[in-house]
Image (cartoon, rainbow, N blue to C red; front, side):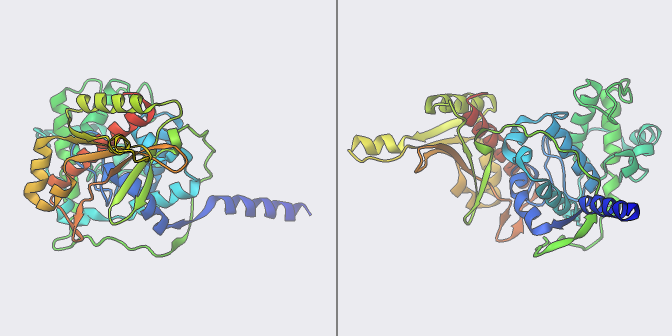
Length: 379
Protein backbone atom coordinates (compact mmCIF):
# COMPACT_ATOMS: atom_id res chain seq x y z
CA UNK A 1 0.00 0.00 0.00
CA UNK A 2 2.71 2.47 1.03
CA UNK A 3 4.72 1.48 -2.05
CA UNK A 4 1.78 2.29 -4.32
CA UNK A 5 1.32 5.72 -2.69
CA UNK A 6 5.00 6.52 -3.16
CA UNK A 7 4.81 5.51 -6.83
CA UNK A 8 1.72 7.69 -7.32
CA UNK A 9 3.44 10.71 -5.77
CA UNK A 10 6.50 10.19 -7.97
CA UNK A 11 4.29 9.90 -11.06
CA UNK A 12 2.43 13.12 -10.30
CA UNK A 13 5.66 14.97 -9.58
CA UNK A 14 7.19 13.82 -12.85
CA UNK A 15 4.05 14.70 -14.80
CA UNK A 16 4.09 18.21 -13.35
CA UNK A 17 7.71 18.64 -14.38
CA UNK A 18 7.17 17.50 -17.98
CA UNK A 19 5.49 19.84 -20.43
CA UNK A 20 5.06 19.38 -24.17
CA UNK A 21 6.29 22.45 -26.02
CA UNK A 22 4.34 23.81 -28.99
CA UNK A 23 6.78 25.68 -31.24
CA UNK A 24 3.98 26.89 -33.52
CA UNK A 25 2.35 28.59 -30.54
CA UNK A 26 5.74 30.01 -29.57
CA UNK A 27 6.12 31.49 -33.04
CA UNK A 28 2.70 33.11 -32.71
CA UNK A 29 3.49 34.60 -29.29
CA UNK A 30 6.81 35.88 -30.60
CA UNK A 31 4.88 38.37 -32.75
CA UNK A 32 4.54 40.43 -29.57
CA UNK A 33 8.28 40.19 -28.89
CA UNK A 34 9.18 40.99 -32.51
CA UNK A 35 8.16 44.64 -32.19
CA UNK A 36 11.29 45.32 -30.14
CA UNK A 37 13.48 42.23 -30.57
CA UNK A 38 13.04 41.57 -34.29
CA UNK A 39 11.08 38.96 -36.19
CA UNK A 40 13.73 36.31 -35.48
CA UNK A 41 14.71 37.58 -32.03
CA UNK A 42 17.90 39.06 -33.49
CA UNK A 43 17.67 42.24 -31.42
CA UNK A 44 19.10 45.58 -32.50
CA UNK A 45 21.67 48.19 -31.67
CA UNK A 46 20.80 50.25 -28.63
CA UNK A 47 20.21 49.56 -24.97
CA UNK A 48 16.72 48.09 -25.03
CA UNK A 49 16.63 45.42 -27.73
CA UNK A 50 18.89 42.51 -26.74
CA UNK A 51 19.21 39.40 -28.86
CA UNK A 52 16.91 36.59 -27.71
CA UNK A 53 17.46 34.14 -30.58
CA UNK A 54 19.54 31.15 -29.58
CA UNK A 55 19.70 32.17 -25.94
CA UNK A 56 19.62 29.18 -23.56
CA UNK A 57 16.16 28.26 -22.30
CA UNK A 58 17.17 28.37 -18.64
CA UNK A 59 18.17 32.02 -18.92
CA UNK A 60 15.13 33.12 -20.92
CA UNK A 61 12.97 31.39 -18.30
CA UNK A 62 14.78 33.14 -15.44
CA UNK A 63 14.61 36.55 -17.13
CA UNK A 64 10.87 36.26 -17.74
CA UNK A 65 10.30 35.22 -14.12
CA UNK A 66 12.33 38.22 -12.93
CA UNK A 67 10.25 40.63 -15.02
CA UNK A 68 6.94 39.11 -13.91
CA UNK A 69 7.97 39.25 -10.25
CA UNK A 70 9.18 42.84 -10.56
CA UNK A 71 12.81 42.00 -9.82
CA UNK A 72 13.66 43.45 -13.21
CA UNK A 73 11.68 46.42 -14.49
CA UNK A 74 10.68 47.41 -18.01
CA UNK A 75 7.20 49.00 -17.96
CA UNK A 76 6.73 49.18 -21.72
CA UNK A 77 7.68 45.53 -22.17
CA UNK A 78 5.34 44.39 -19.42
CA UNK A 79 2.50 46.50 -20.82
CA UNK A 80 2.92 45.25 -24.37
CA UNK A 81 4.10 41.64 -23.99
CA UNK A 82 1.24 40.36 -21.84
CA UNK A 83 3.76 38.27 -19.86
CA UNK A 84 1.94 38.74 -16.57
CA UNK A 85 -1.21 37.20 -18.03
CA UNK A 86 0.42 34.35 -19.98
CA UNK A 87 -0.09 30.73 -19.06
CA UNK A 88 3.05 28.86 -18.08
CA UNK A 89 2.53 26.77 -21.21
CA UNK A 90 2.67 29.87 -23.41
CA UNK A 91 5.82 31.07 -21.69
CA UNK A 92 7.50 27.70 -22.25
CA UNK A 93 6.41 27.70 -25.89
CA UNK A 94 7.90 31.10 -26.72
CA UNK A 95 11.08 30.28 -24.76
CA UNK A 96 11.54 27.08 -26.75
CA UNK A 97 10.85 28.86 -30.04
CA UNK A 98 13.33 31.69 -29.42
CA UNK A 99 16.01 29.34 -28.15
CA UNK A 100 15.65 27.21 -31.30
CA UNK A 101 16.51 30.08 -33.66
CA UNK A 102 20.13 29.37 -34.57
CA UNK A 103 20.84 32.63 -36.37
CA UNK A 104 24.45 32.93 -35.15
CA UNK A 105 25.62 30.45 -37.82
CA UNK A 106 24.68 32.97 -40.51
CA UNK A 107 27.26 35.71 -41.16
CA UNK A 108 24.38 38.12 -41.80
CA UNK A 109 23.60 38.06 -38.07
CA UNK A 110 27.20 38.25 -36.86
CA UNK A 111 27.56 41.24 -34.54
CA UNK A 112 30.51 43.50 -35.47
CA UNK A 113 32.54 45.50 -33.00
CA UNK A 114 30.75 48.82 -32.63
CA UNK A 115 32.31 50.10 -29.42
CA UNK A 116 35.63 51.96 -29.10
CA UNK A 117 37.29 49.23 -27.06
CA UNK A 118 40.47 47.18 -27.25
CA UNK A 119 39.63 43.47 -27.49
CA UNK A 120 43.12 42.40 -26.41
CA UNK A 121 42.82 44.30 -23.13
CA UNK A 122 39.23 43.11 -22.84
CA UNK A 123 40.23 39.46 -23.14
CA UNK A 124 42.44 39.73 -20.06
CA UNK A 125 39.61 41.33 -18.06
CA UNK A 126 37.12 38.74 -19.26
CA UNK A 127 39.35 35.80 -18.36
CA UNK A 128 39.92 37.23 -14.89
CA UNK A 129 36.34 38.12 -13.97
CA UNK A 130 33.85 36.49 -16.36
CA UNK A 131 34.94 33.13 -17.73
CA UNK A 132 34.22 31.21 -14.52
CA UNK A 133 30.48 31.78 -14.94
CA UNK A 134 30.08 32.65 -18.62
CA UNK A 135 32.65 30.12 -19.94
CA UNK A 136 35.79 30.80 -21.93
CA UNK A 137 33.81 30.83 -25.17
CA UNK A 138 31.09 33.12 -23.77
CA UNK A 139 28.35 30.52 -24.13
CA UNK A 140 27.31 30.70 -20.46
CA UNK A 141 26.80 27.99 -17.86
CA UNK A 142 23.44 26.73 -16.68
CA UNK A 143 24.72 25.62 -13.27
CA UNK A 144 25.86 29.21 -12.69
CA UNK A 145 22.63 30.63 -14.19
CA UNK A 146 24.96 32.71 -16.36
CA UNK A 147 23.68 33.70 -19.82
CA UNK A 148 25.43 33.47 -23.14
CA UNK A 149 27.38 36.65 -23.92
CA UNK A 150 28.65 35.57 -27.32
CA UNK A 151 26.41 37.13 -29.95
CA UNK A 152 24.83 39.72 -27.67
CA UNK A 153 24.64 43.35 -28.77
CA UNK A 154 27.44 45.46 -27.21
CA UNK A 155 25.22 48.45 -26.37
CA UNK A 156 22.95 46.22 -24.31
CA UNK A 157 25.93 44.65 -22.50
CA UNK A 158 27.36 48.10 -21.72
CA UNK A 159 24.03 49.26 -20.31
CA UNK A 160 23.70 46.07 -18.24
CA UNK A 161 27.14 46.50 -16.68
CA UNK A 162 26.39 50.13 -15.87
CA UNK A 163 23.20 48.98 -14.13
CA UNK A 164 25.17 46.37 -12.18
CA UNK A 165 27.61 49.07 -11.06
CA UNK A 166 24.76 51.37 -10.00
CA UNK A 167 22.84 48.53 -8.26
CA UNK A 168 19.88 49.15 -10.55
CA UNK A 169 20.11 45.48 -11.46
CA UNK A 170 21.62 42.49 -9.64
CA UNK A 171 24.65 40.73 -11.04
CA UNK A 172 24.87 37.01 -10.27
CA UNK A 173 21.67 37.36 -8.18
CA UNK A 174 23.74 39.13 -5.54
CA UNK A 175 22.65 42.66 -4.57
CA UNK A 176 26.08 43.24 -3.03
CA UNK A 177 28.12 41.94 -5.98
CA UNK A 178 31.15 44.18 -6.58
CA UNK A 179 32.58 42.63 -9.74
CA UNK A 180 32.37 45.81 -11.82
CA UNK A 181 32.63 48.46 -9.12
CA UNK A 182 36.21 49.36 -9.96
CA UNK A 183 35.86 49.11 -13.73
CA UNK A 184 36.34 52.32 -15.70
CA UNK A 185 34.10 52.95 -18.69
CA UNK A 186 37.04 52.21 -20.97
CA UNK A 187 37.63 48.86 -19.30
CA UNK A 188 33.98 48.00 -19.77
CA UNK A 189 34.24 48.95 -23.44
CA UNK A 190 37.42 46.86 -23.81
CA UNK A 191 35.77 43.79 -22.33
CA UNK A 192 32.69 44.18 -24.51
CA UNK A 193 34.92 44.59 -27.56
CA UNK A 194 36.29 41.15 -26.70
CA UNK A 195 32.89 39.53 -26.14
CA UNK A 196 31.84 40.86 -29.55
CA UNK A 197 34.47 38.62 -31.12
CA UNK A 198 33.19 35.44 -29.47
CA UNK A 199 30.31 34.85 -31.86
CA UNK A 200 32.73 34.78 -34.79
CA UNK A 201 33.47 31.14 -33.92
CA UNK A 202 29.78 30.29 -34.37
CA UNK A 203 29.60 31.41 -38.01
CA UNK A 204 29.51 28.64 -40.61
CA UNK A 205 30.85 29.99 -43.94
CA UNK A 206 28.19 30.00 -46.62
CA UNK A 207 25.36 28.98 -44.29
CA UNK A 208 22.14 30.95 -44.44
CA UNK A 209 19.54 31.02 -41.71
CA UNK A 210 16.26 29.50 -42.88
CA UNK A 211 13.27 30.57 -40.75
CA UNK A 212 11.61 27.56 -39.13
CA UNK A 213 8.05 26.64 -39.99
CA UNK A 214 6.94 24.82 -36.85
CA UNK A 215 3.84 22.73 -37.47
CA UNK A 216 3.48 20.60 -34.37
CA UNK A 217 4.38 20.38 -30.73
CA UNK A 218 7.93 19.47 -29.82
CA UNK A 219 8.35 16.30 -27.72
CA UNK A 220 7.93 16.78 -23.98
CA UNK A 221 10.89 18.23 -22.12
CA UNK A 222 11.72 18.00 -18.45
CA UNK A 223 11.62 21.29 -16.61
CA UNK A 224 11.68 22.24 -12.94
CA UNK A 225 8.31 23.02 -11.32
CA UNK A 226 7.72 26.76 -11.33
CA UNK A 227 6.28 28.54 -8.33
CA UNK A 228 3.15 30.50 -9.32
CA UNK A 229 3.74 34.23 -9.57
CA UNK A 230 1.03 36.78 -8.78
CA UNK A 231 -0.41 38.44 -11.90
CA UNK A 232 0.43 42.09 -12.43
CA UNK A 233 -2.43 44.14 -13.90
CA UNK A 234 -2.10 45.41 -17.47
CA UNK A 235 -4.56 48.04 -18.76
CA UNK A 236 -7.11 46.42 -21.03
CA UNK A 237 -5.27 43.11 -20.93
CA UNK A 238 -2.17 44.51 -22.62
CA UNK A 239 -1.15 44.37 -26.25
CA UNK A 240 -3.19 42.34 -28.70
CA UNK A 241 -1.76 41.17 -32.00
CA UNK A 242 -3.86 40.78 -35.14
CA UNK A 243 -2.59 39.37 -38.44
CA UNK A 244 -3.98 40.76 -41.67
CA UNK A 245 -1.29 41.11 -44.34
CA UNK A 246 0.65 43.15 -41.84
CA UNK A 247 0.92 42.87 -38.08
CA UNK A 248 -1.40 45.18 -36.15
CA UNK A 249 -1.03 45.95 -32.48
CA UNK A 250 -3.93 47.27 -30.42
CA UNK A 251 -4.22 48.36 -26.82
CA UNK A 252 -7.35 49.33 -24.89
CA UNK A 253 -7.44 52.55 -22.90
CA UNK A 254 -7.23 52.02 -19.16
CA UNK A 255 -10.56 52.64 -17.35
CA UNK A 256 -10.81 56.29 -16.38
CA UNK A 257 -8.48 57.53 -19.13
CA UNK A 258 -10.37 59.97 -21.37
CA UNK A 259 -9.71 60.66 -25.02
CA UNK A 260 -8.20 63.99 -24.06
CA UNK A 261 -5.95 62.35 -21.45
CA UNK A 262 -4.75 59.79 -23.98
CA UNK A 263 -3.99 62.36 -26.67
CA UNK A 264 -2.11 64.63 -24.28
CA UNK A 265 -0.07 61.74 -22.91
CA UNK A 266 0.84 60.57 -26.43
CA UNK A 267 1.89 64.04 -27.55
CA UNK A 268 4.02 64.54 -24.44
CA UNK A 269 5.71 61.15 -24.88
CA UNK A 270 6.39 61.94 -28.54
CA UNK A 271 8.16 65.17 -27.57
CA UNK A 272 10.22 63.23 -25.03
CA UNK A 273 11.24 60.77 -27.78
CA UNK A 274 12.09 63.56 -30.24
CA UNK A 275 9.27 62.58 -32.58
CA UNK A 276 7.22 65.21 -34.35
CA UNK A 277 3.44 65.14 -34.68
CA UNK A 278 3.28 65.84 -38.42
CA UNK A 279 -0.45 65.42 -38.86
CA UNK A 280 -3.73 64.45 -37.25
CA UNK A 281 -7.21 63.81 -38.54
CA UNK A 282 -10.33 63.84 -36.38
CA UNK A 283 -12.28 61.58 -38.72
CA UNK A 284 -15.42 61.10 -36.62
CA UNK A 285 -15.62 64.80 -35.75
CA UNK A 286 -15.44 65.70 -39.42
CA UNK A 287 -18.18 63.21 -40.32
CA UNK A 288 -20.41 64.36 -37.46
CA UNK A 289 -20.09 67.95 -38.71
CA UNK A 290 -21.74 66.67 -41.89
CA UNK A 291 -24.52 65.05 -39.90
CA UNK A 292 -23.11 61.52 -40.19
CA UNK A 293 -23.21 59.63 -36.90
CA UNK A 294 -20.08 57.49 -36.45
CA UNK A 295 -18.00 55.85 -33.70
CA UNK A 296 -14.99 57.85 -32.56
CA UNK A 297 -11.98 57.68 -34.89
CA UNK A 298 -8.88 59.87 -34.90
CA UNK A 299 -5.49 59.33 -36.54
CA UNK A 300 -2.20 60.77 -35.27
CA UNK A 301 0.94 60.77 -37.41
CA UNK A 302 4.46 60.90 -35.99
CA UNK A 303 7.82 61.08 -37.76
CA UNK A 304 11.57 61.36 -37.32
CA UNK A 305 12.81 62.54 -40.74
CA UNK A 306 16.21 60.82 -40.46
CA UNK A 307 14.63 57.45 -39.66
CA UNK A 308 12.25 57.84 -42.58
CA UNK A 309 15.19 58.63 -44.85
CA UNK A 310 17.13 55.52 -43.76
CA UNK A 311 14.25 53.21 -44.50
CA UNK A 312 13.00 54.74 -47.75
CA UNK A 313 16.50 54.89 -49.27
CA UNK A 314 16.76 51.15 -48.65
CA UNK A 315 13.37 50.38 -50.16
CA UNK A 316 10.78 52.91 -51.36
CA UNK A 317 7.98 50.56 -50.24
CA UNK A 318 8.50 51.89 -46.71
CA UNK A 319 7.04 55.20 -47.89
CA UNK A 320 3.63 53.55 -47.58
CA UNK A 321 4.19 53.32 -43.80
CA UNK A 322 5.38 56.91 -43.37
CA UNK A 323 4.61 58.82 -41.31
CA UNK A 324 4.00 56.28 -38.55
CA UNK A 325 0.39 56.28 -37.42
CA UNK A 326 -1.48 55.58 -34.21
CA UNK A 327 -5.24 55.49 -34.46
CA UNK A 328 -7.75 55.87 -31.64
CA UNK A 329 -10.84 53.81 -32.44
CA UNK A 330 -14.15 53.18 -30.66
CA UNK A 331 -15.43 49.62 -30.99
CA UNK A 332 -19.04 48.36 -31.06
CA UNK A 333 -19.10 48.17 -27.25
CA UNK A 334 -18.00 51.78 -26.86
CA UNK A 335 -14.46 50.89 -25.74
CA UNK A 336 -11.55 53.00 -26.99
CA UNK A 337 -8.49 51.35 -28.53
CA UNK A 338 -5.13 52.57 -29.77
CA UNK A 339 -3.78 50.78 -32.85
CA UNK A 340 -0.55 50.77 -34.85
CA UNK A 341 1.17 48.82 -37.61
CA UNK A 342 4.34 46.88 -37.01
CA UNK A 343 7.18 47.81 -39.36
CA UNK A 344 7.93 44.26 -40.44
CA UNK A 345 11.56 43.58 -41.22
CA UNK A 346 10.76 41.48 -44.28
CA UNK A 347 9.99 42.56 -47.83
CA UNK A 348 9.23 39.77 -50.30
CA UNK A 349 10.35 37.35 -47.56
CA UNK A 350 13.87 38.83 -47.58
CA UNK A 351 15.40 40.17 -44.37
CA UNK A 352 16.50 43.78 -44.67
CA UNK A 353 20.01 45.12 -44.00
CA UNK A 354 20.87 45.44 -40.32
CA UNK A 355 20.82 49.25 -40.33
CA UNK A 356 17.25 49.24 -41.60
CA UNK A 357 16.19 46.50 -39.18
CA UNK A 358 17.69 48.51 -36.30
CA UNK A 359 15.79 51.62 -37.41
CA UNK A 360 12.51 49.72 -37.79
CA UNK A 361 12.85 48.20 -34.31
CA UNK A 362 13.66 51.61 -32.84
CA UNK A 363 10.57 53.11 -34.48
CA UNK A 364 8.40 50.22 -33.27
CA UNK A 365 9.65 50.69 -29.72
CA UNK A 366 9.01 54.43 -29.81
CA UNK A 367 5.51 53.97 -31.15
CA UNK A 368 4.78 51.37 -28.47
CA UNK A 369 6.03 53.83 -25.83
CA UNK A 370 3.60 56.42 -27.19
CA UNK A 371 0.76 53.91 -27.27
CA UNK A 372 1.41 52.81 -23.68
CA UNK A 373 1.45 56.45 -22.59
CA UNK A 374 -1.91 57.01 -24.27
CA UNK A 375 -3.50 53.84 -22.92
CA UNK A 376 -2.46 54.60 -19.34
CA UNK A 377 -2.67 58.41 -19.47
CA UNK A 378 0.85 58.52 -18.04
CA UNK A 379 4.15 59.61 -19.54
